[in-house]
Image (tube, rainbow, N blue to C red; front, top):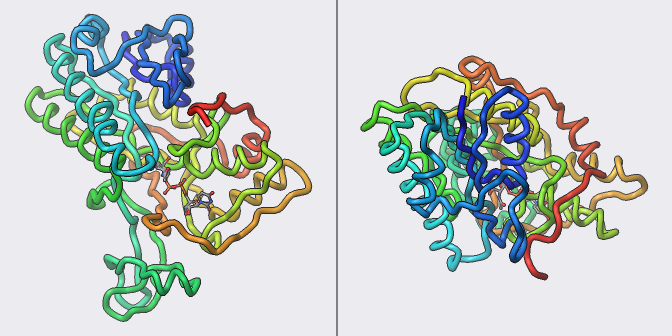
Length: 348
Ligand code: UD1
């Protein structure tokens, strides 16, 4: 198939491009080479054209004759502050709207969209006495006292985490999350009006070789890895019991190839995860052990707005796309402890 891959020079896009080419696909690779991701004045890699997806004319050229678009280009992460809003809206939401319009014009009716687990907000919780509950937000006094788990809105007891399925409500709690939900909604509306197919892949915590170094837009894996590289130790917030699903970039690439090759109709969303939840303390410990004689520091500090647990159900992606992660986080994190990272993404 002829595949337009946006964000092709990025951490995830680079791996997807390799996998698509290995799979015999004809890849039209584009990337805006945003300074926040690639540094100032970075040239695109060979065979990647510099295209900003907000540029309708450039997208019209790129999408001509394409069977499927694999849309990875985005501004990611938690951002710095509210001043980031126009950047998320422009690069994620407006660019997706431009892309969908140009796909419509070119007669291309298949989209694979990079989404994120951040669309779920706080995750899913179960009270031992009251079943599935919408937990009460964590209070400053609980957090200051080291009581990090959410409480049941009925009995006030701590609640347990549970796997989040794709049918969970979308509750964005950050600018980035809002932009990912908006992208999904534009794509859903496009699918309804054109009869096109959309596969939204909700990535969980992606890690692996080539991950950008620690920036204000980085997830915890890059932060811990960068600390170790600098001769520092990972600083684990709360009590380290926060549960996440760390999925290797090669598995994320494989999920994208499966989605590109899938024959799904209408709008479908899938969790892309390893299915092997791990605590943040275990991640820090695994990285430290792989590097030798260092241990993480559990600080007991917390970040307001952090999600306590967010852990996904991988079943639907396995059933419908045939995607199952093959990299066990225990192995992948061990490799990641010494894997090369990308150069500094932002001026220090
Ligand atoms: C992260 C990203 C999110 C992305 C998602 C999937 C942020 C804030 N969130 O979500 O945009 O879509 O991964 O890839 O970038 N922590 C420490 N020490 C640190 C930093 C973080 O213990 O130095 C803890 C945090 O308190 C949190 C956990 O690690 O409990 C995960 O943090 P992080 O990766 O930043 O956020 P996620 O919510 O997992």
